[in-house]
Length: 124
Image (tube, rainbow, N blue to C red):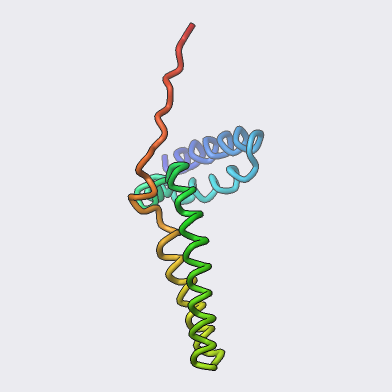
């Protein structure tokens, strides 16, 4: 009984991989991981942890990235010149990257204010 279930599962996995590899070879590789952890449902978990942001949020993230990097490195250069030590410049630069990572990488709520509204398909 158990062997029969495993055969059915493997056949389902092989058919799924064959259909996916026709269209997108990368998704075939990611689905191998998905089937090996099918009890885990990684895509649902990823969407709950880090939901997608909208286009306005992407533009805002890009502007914030450049603003943080330019200001942070200008401040780190100023700190390094005032202290006359390269160590402070490097620490301030690393701190700038860390702050940028925390602010830009997660999809915070202010990045998801304008979600796309999809139009329903009309059957003619």
